[in-house]
Image 1 (cartoon, rainbow, N blue to C red):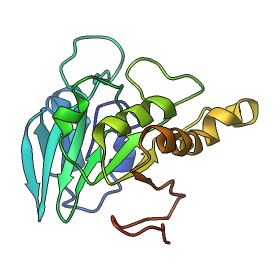
Image 2: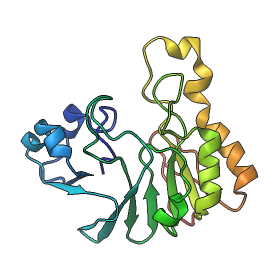
Image 3: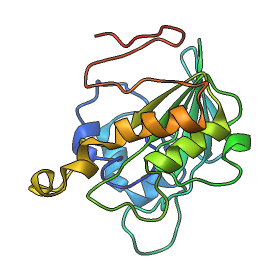
Image 4: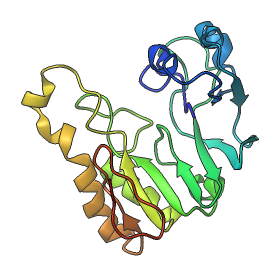
Length: 206
């Protein structure tokens, strides 16, 4: 699932490493904006908010996101930024990159798990992003059974980890703290690399 066209989410060399036949679900207009996407040789499905597609036993529904969906921050806005609701044994909301918007809970609907971005690229978050506090506000509106903070601590300009390590390492812990206050009924799983959990199971496992 590719939520939008920014290079930290649609990174062609990374996508080229996927197994042959892997299906990509991308925003409407992605191939026009990034022609090299079609040359990867992978099946590509373009979707807009409200569209649904089936992948095996899963149903994937595209939902709106409050984020700049362009490949570069200039030119016309031809591709939307998206979130996705994936329904199989459980319903999972993958928010992509998004800011907090009033209709989020209505657009997403009931979900069992929410994967919410809590940080960003570099030391400052611009418009159209969730930090730990705003992500906890989103969690309070969505009210899933469980949540996982994502989009922090992995992509950082060289050298800044030593200058401002707080912004790099702490958003996950901050989200846990804010979520306990704003959405105390939601089970929050701050996962390390390689960890996973199954909905309904209390502890992460390797």
